[in-house]
Image (cartoon, rainbow, N blue to C red; front, top):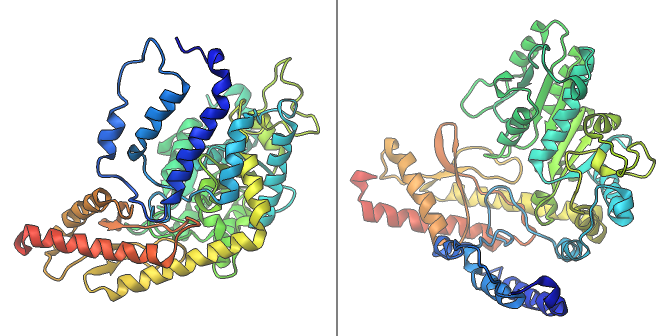
Length: 481
């Protein structure tokens, strides 16, 4: 029997074993296949019954490392799916320490350093994004829970407007919550609305086209029709298919004029505010009531990490404060982040966030964003120059939306062709580029956010898509394409 206490002397050996595996992974990550062809089969090897007698620390680690072809090298430079960054050298090393130190960042008493680093990280992030200094904030698991936090504060505000403390009394007997947005609303915000009991059916999307652009005039008409009743507006800073933005400043005007709450989902688009080259896209964010972003996207800290910022800091404690004799006072001067977000026990995410901000500062993160903007424009030019590729949208930020369209293809078969090509690209493994539907058409939408990505990496997207596309056309024959 392998009882952990019997192997306490192996802790250092186990860490060294893991470090050797990590060094091997990182040594070839710039050139390694992003997804092994047998990744699914390798992963399925682990589907076995729980052993009665454990293998022991080092043997279990050996089995784990032997299954590394079952992972996707999403932290590498040629992973362009899900708007997912990697881990900067500083963030990665700090995250290792966060695991070793194993701090609970819920209460100051549980970890003064973890609490202070989270508080400082929130202040630095507000500075980085140009948000007002007096706003409150909290680190979360990602955009879904960050949206949950911002919209929970909005729900509390909405209840107050009706004279009800919804955390105490619930929503029973209250009218439906009007939630107004455009077609760019992300599924994570929709999920947060559902979890908060606000009702997905109460989300009204004002969009004149299949792409999802916001019809701000129609949204204003809906606000006017409410006759001053409280409403929640969700603005979207960075749409996931093409990187487009709702007119945030216009939405801020409407929120002020009609007394609505403006929540801005800036999961990756909030980073546009780091550079004059793109900051106009997110103009007006500082006038919102709540704003969110992801750390494991463009900040390039390891999973999981997100941020939520709220204009009225006290609404966080109102939404999430929880008391028990052993937890301490949520109103204490030193920060207890368990009272500012949904989790009581919390990973010390501030360790990695603080370290990467301290390591590279404002200038380093601006340089990374600007490099990625330039890479997106390079990719757009390469796509435009390729006769069998068709760009479907402008590329205002870091996502380039396009499809494969050979001259021999029949228009009715393009969606099926691009779906097959998408599967072929993932199976090939040299780059990871997912497919989507944009304006009703199947398309590719590579997102450039990884700190390692270079010109060679984005050029490879075009080369792989053209090569595999030509192969599909040749095999199928033009008549069936």
